Length: 258
Image (tube, rainbow, N blue to C red):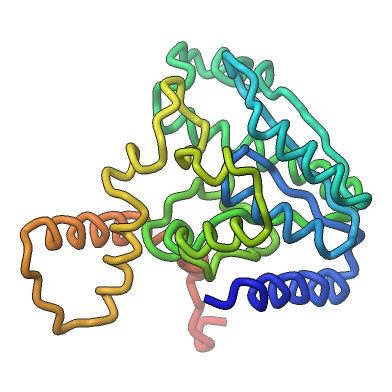
């Protein structure tokens, strides 16, 4: 993969998009993960104002990777500024209103956290006329739909959504993203037990990438039982989350009824 050329291409694409949109800058939520770290670095390279926003919710310990990445970016780029907003009170209030004491232990409340972060990003985006930058990769956004609808899926543009996780890792290496971030287990940070993305999916990103490629080959013969199980898991996730990856369906009224 021609990582340097891809980096240059994405940065040029971001510049062209923001000029056409007449926005003033970019805003992106950072988590200390490799996808948000790469996406925020690429946005920073445009030289347009770039706000990196960390939004902890009921975290028992500090997210040092987010803070380290923020320090790394702000020291490297003069157009980058870092903001941290703790959304714990907002989330706790929501749990109180709906009388749910489980906090982070349910999928619906994990999704609420993601949507609260989206609301916060768009608050600042609207205030400053910024574009919200997405951080999803190709497997997540177009393979298995591993994102929250109107949460981390609610963005204005996707700079790395045509890159697989392994390709994002190559870009991270080329950009000299902090080694700790490159080696860290991918996690959405929405669960009390800090389960990883792969724990939630029940399959690795490497396996998902393989399955995504196999879908293009209808004549593929599964030689191992595990191969079929991985492919089946991918297909189940893909079908289950199809509604996230499609445009919102519109009921088209026939002209003879108008």
